Amino acid sequence: MSSFIHDADAGTTTMSELLRVYDALSPDVFFGCYAYATQSGFRAFELAVGIDFWATTSTRWLFGIDYGRSHPRALREIDKRPNTHVRIFDGEWVVNQEGFRPRRDYHAKASIMENTATHAFGAVLGSGNFSYNGLQRSVEAGTSILATKKNP
Picture 1 (cartoon, rainbow, N blue to C red):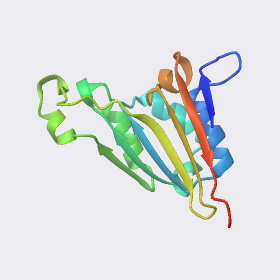
Picture 2 (cartoon, one colour):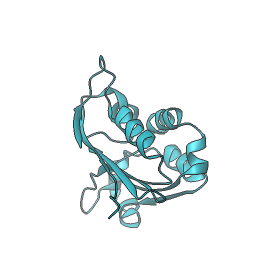
Picture 3 (cartoon, helix red, strand yellow):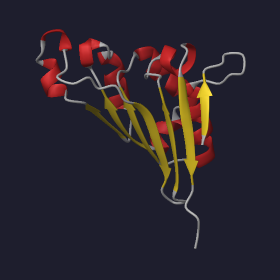
Picture 4 (cartoon, rainbow, N blue to C red):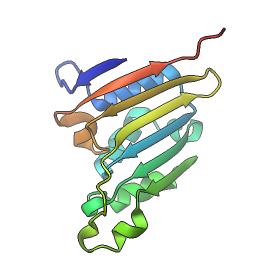
């Protein structure tokens, strides 16, 4: 486990931690939960992990659309990728409210990864949303976790 704060000089960001955990695990399963997603965040993520990520990794995403902050185009682009499943937290309720006001704010920001063959797990939990600023630029903090199953 390690904690981090974005440090542009050192190159430490939420994105760099996602890549570090991803590279350590070579996961085949990825679950991302974010309060909102933007087109810039999707593009930054895809550029960082590479286009092959979608073909080799089964992904599930749970995004919020509270207050209309998520970009519909970003959600559509992610949903179009192979091996991908996108859900919206309480989406049926939120889309029917003026100003997309939620009955309860959805504020998650976490990615969980698994390599099912090696039983290795990893997670990156923090304050950054799935936006360029949240992944790479803003002042954000978080924790990265890597865990492997020991053989008896």
